[in-house]
Image (cartoon, rainbow, N blue to C red; front, side, top):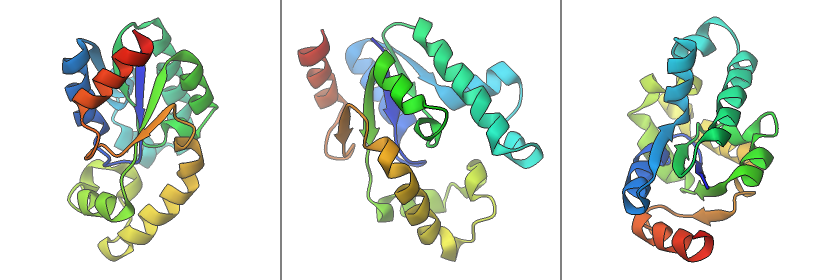
Length: 169
C-alpha cells in the first residue's frame, strides 16, 4: 500500500516522506518532481505561461499513475487533494496522512521560500499571512478527509511508521 502525504505548501511533506520511507523501507516519490520530469517543464513555468487548470490536469494524471507503485511514500503538492476528486482517489488507493501545521508556522517557513513557490510569486511579504489564512481555509475541508491527521513536529516519522505497521501490515 502507498502512503500519500498531504498538507499545505511548506508543511514538510518531502522531508517527512524521506524520513518515513527510511523507517518503513519504502520508496519515495515527490509528485511535483515527477510532474516536472514527465512533462519536461517546471511547475513555475506552467503557472506563468499557461494556467493552473492545465497543471492540475497533468497533476491528476501523474497522481493516478502512482496506483501502479507499491510501498511508496508519495509527497503531494499542497493543492493536489483539492482538485479533480484527487482526495477521494487517494483515500481509495492508499493511506493518506495530513501534515497539519499552524498558520504562523507555515508563514514563517514560507517567508524564505517564495521564489520556489509559484502561488507565492506575486504575494508581498506583508500579505503572506492573509494569503496563507485564505488558502488554508479554502483547502482545509480537503485535508481533513485524510485517514490520519498529525502535527509532524509532535508525531515523528518513527511513530507514524509504528502506527502504520500496527494497522496495515
